[in-house]
Image (cartoon, rainbow, N blue to C red; front, side):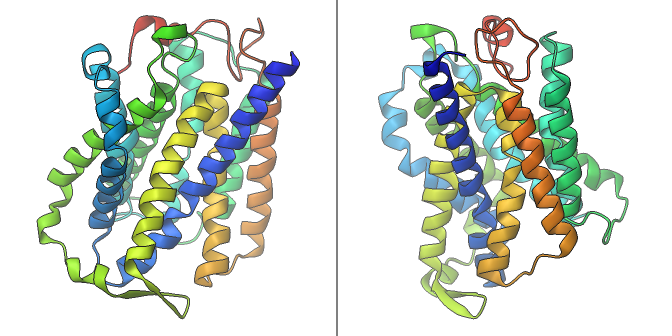
Length: 328
């Protein structure tokens, strides 16, 4: 691998980790708002709609995407924004949060399945091992063995969230090797958030929300924090920065590698909940977090550089999906 390729991949890995940290912090900020009286879906709506408004100037700047890539924008908004959020919250209304989170983070394995069976590109054994370790570690992090209740519909909803997350990684990779014709990732994110906001408005019905909650404080492990500050964190850090760094990282790595690194989100969310909310980690969770880190490292380090004629665990010279158009 050339020094330039190593540098680009290193930047991509850093962005992917930053995205996982940003996404992982959303739950810590959202939980006090929910406990203060906001419905979970209303928090999701505030998150996505607020981020869409922040990104609105970029949407105007890249309005040509509406003509050139309408399917990509619709797919990213429906799957990568609204779908993941809506299906996950629907799932946790029927099954334990830990089970839903584990099923959702089967997405890296599903991405490898997409690469292997749809794009018909080989996947390295090391990358597959990394996914297995990451998913196994997640089982410990979320303590899936505690409170498991088999609900077919709940599990299907969680699996739908995982499939939507696959769409996020695959669609984020669109046009990454297509030169000047590649859609600007910031424009894609901006319109994706707008589409997601519209869809979530119909689902969450924000006109029934108790807006007064935002004018008061919310408790965070005994400390009162202004609700508007928590909302600002969710919108700016856990959504705008998280999506921007996440999509750019996929462009520099690949959907499958970025997907495995994104498993760190569960570890980060658990650690932040421990520090900020007083939700202590058990020994199995600590061990599971270490296993997730190991799995992510193995998958990332086994990926050949883009342009390398090796089995795929990361990028490759051909982007068959990009050549075929969007998956939306």
